[in-house]
Length: 327
Image (cartoon, rainbow, N blue to C red):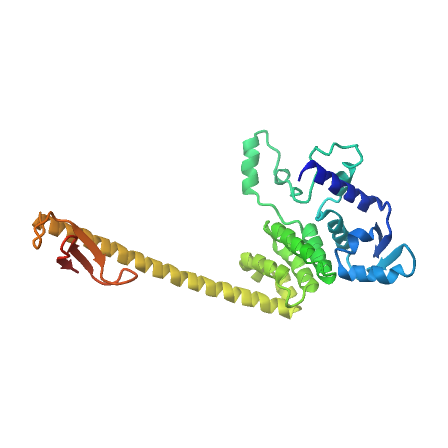
């Protein structure tokens, strides 16, 4: 992002945080967001329709989002202003906005959601040797950030509700990136019900990610009392996990069958090569010139089958095509 784009992004972030020139208030829980229709309405047809209805009541409209998660609504609004959102450390938005008032050089490094990744070095015990710290980091995988995962689940939900497909895709991507970290059973028990409560049966985005997480930890989960108790109250979740386990088992069987087929083919290739070497050696020892055309011996070899190294080995003279061997 060049300096001009960064400046524009910083100004829009400042408008969101200050509410300056606001012509619309969105209330959610105990939060009031002073926002601007020019950012909100083009992003969501649903919210635009609500603005049109409330505009008749006065120049400054108010929209009440009573059923939504306030943190998720804030992230949705962040996205409408800067095209992204922070799933951790809200102070970074203030840092971005501050760069537009002259107090922070725009050319300096401004935190962005893309670079807002957990500091894995900070999870490692201090060491006087930098290389030792890096070694410890490699051996100590990060635990998942349950708070960030939860926020992404709710953002995914409001994005679906207010028909903002790009935000929904972004929330799924952020969730998937965070889900790549190390899970323990308690984290899965915390997040999995939230994902199923926030999504429909036909919406497999976040659900499939969590099923993959469960498959990575199947051995630990199946003997975990808390996980087993959770499944008792969630029939669809239970069926999905069983289907995923069965599908994984079938995939492994297919992989095993494919591996055996490759091994068998390799064995045939090796046997064919050994036969070729033996036949060539016998012919070269017996002949210096072709016994048919009397030219210097120049042999070609081919496989008698069309595919997959089946069939006999055929050795002929390249000049007259006289067949010397077929084994």
